[in-house]
Image 1: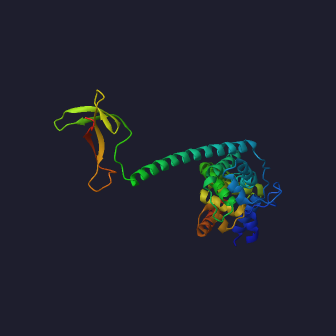
Image 2: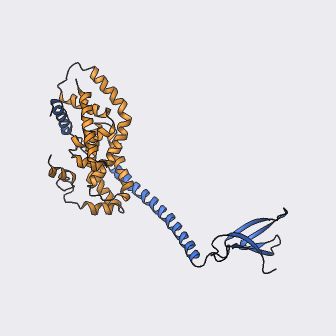
Image 3: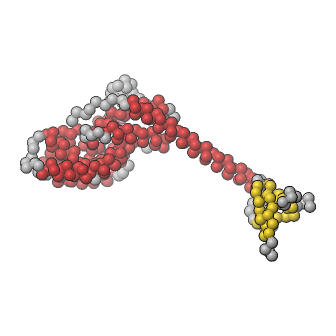
Length: 194
Length: 133
């Protein structure tokens, strides 16, 4: 994805959220949302789809998705008064809140995922060739990684963010993102080897 | 790029392309957001009032200090026990900066003794005999 497309992906427009029907001045809306609950609800409506999709891609079709999405938006309400513009899109901040929620969830599920992946590998004598099964194995393998690798890999591959955008979301340096991407990929390859 | 890396990219592409369940607006969550907003706002207002109270108190003390220091002890209500060097003690009632004996007679007053030439904002609290006696 080129830089322009990435910027479009991170910018809220009417095209991206067709149900809105009009471009939204995000900055004005966020300032209003600090004192006006109606504007706050509008923020939720604007970003619900993107955050739900991100959480679902990381967690899978799990019953916990709704809880994680809800907790992300409730955290948004609690911390919005302290939110300050740093040049990063507001959605980057929301991704950070969601990432923190999912990382905590992933930490709890890691042992379960390791067990599932081990059972799956033991029951598989040769590569399955079935796309669905391999994708499920990838999701399981992701869940066995340390959450810091999971979050970088998922933002890069599933949300198609650049290294700089991931650094904005996670509040770390570009170099840190690059090294986590590289180590995360290596770990995944080892886990998915037949 | 290696074949393994290509395979990983392909798998992630498949994962990304998986159809997501339709997302609808959760009315219950919207309601929780509204409630959370109210509770956050109440907590902030409470913290604001406490901070304003502390700031006002600090301002009063600051102004009083700057305007010539504290010359009398005010606002004390209760008992004070005075012990003489020989061990004898007597308990007196304190009202404002005045001391009263058990019969209600004014017997003295509390004052802050500062070093010479200094503003009496701090120093020893002494009891002086009442001027009415």
